[in-house]
Amino acid sequence: TRDWSSDVCSSDLPGLMERWRQQRDEDKRRRQEEEEREMERTLDALLEKLHQQGEASLTPLERKQLQQISDRIRNRNRQ
Image (cartoon, rainbow, N blue to C red; front, side, top):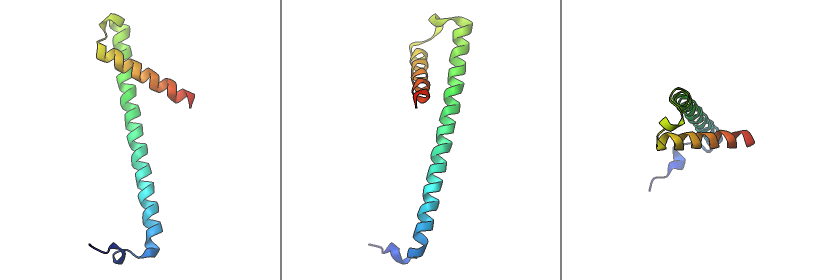
């Protein structure tokens, strides 16, 4: 078993941990923003189809997506 303690000074650990946390938080924020943009693109496409072709034109998958997005927006607005 390797002793990792000799590779990093104990005085460096708080800085390393903080940078790691900041990077993790930034990555999470970026993923959430991308998911939000993708959700908006999907919603726009579904609403355009609904407007152009009517509700009967939506597939079961599209109806499910529309419901999931609606629920997500509704829950986000409650927070």
